[in-house]
Amino acid sequence: MRGAEQKWGDQELLDAIKRWADEHEGRPPRWVDWERAIPGYPTSFTVRIRCGSWNDALEMAGFSPNQGVSTSKISDELIAKGKKLHKQGKNNTEIARELNISLTTVKRRIGPSVPRQNKPRNADERREARVAALRRALEKNN
Image (cartoon, rainbow, N blue to C red):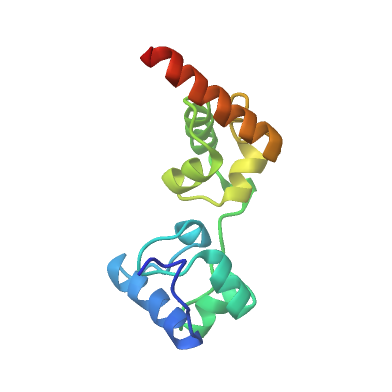
């Protein structure tokens, strides 16, 4: 059962945090690790809703809360790496994971997320984009 579809009890949430730490050399998960559904784990949203905050969940599971790295202590070299990844088209979440820094730090020190080209803004635009894509596919096949 996928993580997002499972009903998570309090003890199951805490057990999932401990299991993650066991599988990652003792490091408890960061919220960005569980931002999207991973089979066998709750999403970070589920954890925060059930436990009050991410750090509260870590404490309940027996870990020290994530202290994070002060944005003022991030090296210029790390910022340069992040900006390079940004120019390569990586989004902020991917950059945060790759550099092992918080998403907030990426947003503050590296820049806004790379916007998708022509991203539909509402349901009507999404529908129009799907119809246009289907028409292009049909024209290509004819």
